[in-house]
Amino acid sequence: NQWANVMRWELRTRMFLRTGEFLWQEGHTAHSNHAEAKEEVLRMLNIYAKFAEEWMAMPVLCGIKTQSEKFAGALESYCIEAMMQDGKALQAGTSHDLGQNFGKAFDVKFQSKEGTNEYVWQTSWGVSTRLIGGLIMTHSDDNGLVLPPKLAPVQVALVPIFGKGADEGAVKEAGEKVAASLREKGISVVFDTREYKPGYKYFEWEQKGVPIRLELGQRDLDKNQAMLKERVGDGKEP
Image (cartoon, rainbow, N blue to C red; front, side):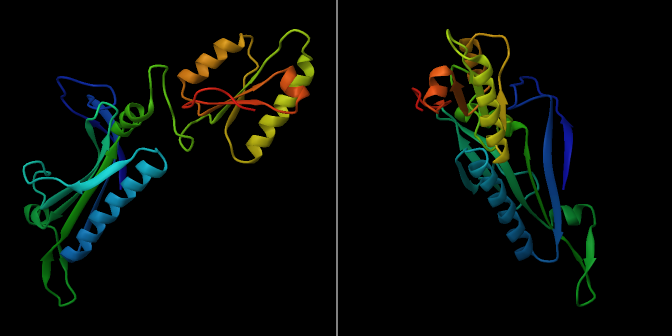
């Protein structure tokens, strides 16, 4: 199992989808029989599918590739395919049953329980930074990124509002308490006290795909509440 940089001579590159250099995770295993190897192939396919769906919130279809599309030298190739907003499918991960083909090609053997030398049964599987492209294309819109909460580096952006008659000190103090309370619960939060207008901050955090924005002003303070805006929803609610 390794994480490595890969260089490819791509004539027509597409950001995150088909690039000249990318980072990928790949693994290779060797087994004493085909059944164990096949089990590993499907186990890794399911791990990739689970990560895509539970962490990236990106639904995928699991299946087997046709003989013409399978990995060269493999007996069978499996993949997860994510459906993009334009209706196209994106290959997001692969898992290959290599059989004994590469064991024979490179003379990789093991000693069986019976004492005979046998060729290994191999698998290989991998995902790459193409997952980032899939995530962007699955969720994002014309206003910018939309990031799933489990992967978002900032899960909540807390924006204070200092309007006329507002007690800025009280608003900031309340904001710090809210931020601290969220952090205690394991939520990543930024309390944005920069010297910009609220609208500027709203748009910036929306572009960055932050899942939730909280707004806290004097009126909210008086009502012991904060206004909540979801990145993927319309309107706000206390």
